Length: 141
Image (cartoon, rainbow, N blue to C red):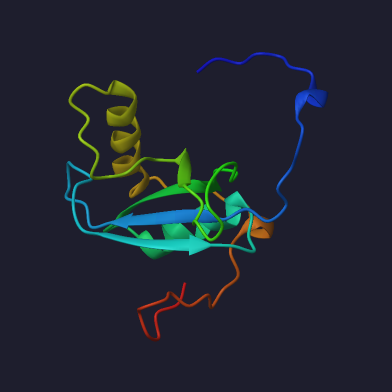
């Protein structure tokens, strides 16, 4: 981890409606590999999304949270969908192979540890109760 002081005026734009992507992995005891359920979440901030993800994951699944970003369209033909990318905020893709990537391996190790030692989110920043999970009728956080 490295911290560098910057001039806050160097940013050119803001996004006040972020889209987060949550990955829930049916991980084993010692590895994050497994089936994945993926959800996009809007209308929330990152703390609410982390709270929702870890409440859904419980002690059986691992989770990861990414910020979804669309590349600006510059020279594409009209109607071409944007190229979508992810900025990992918490964890990583649980199915990534980490043989030559110690940063990803460390992220996956910490994902496993969060099942027993979750992120503490203050009451004021928690996801609202009763949020339904698409595709799982009747299942709520």
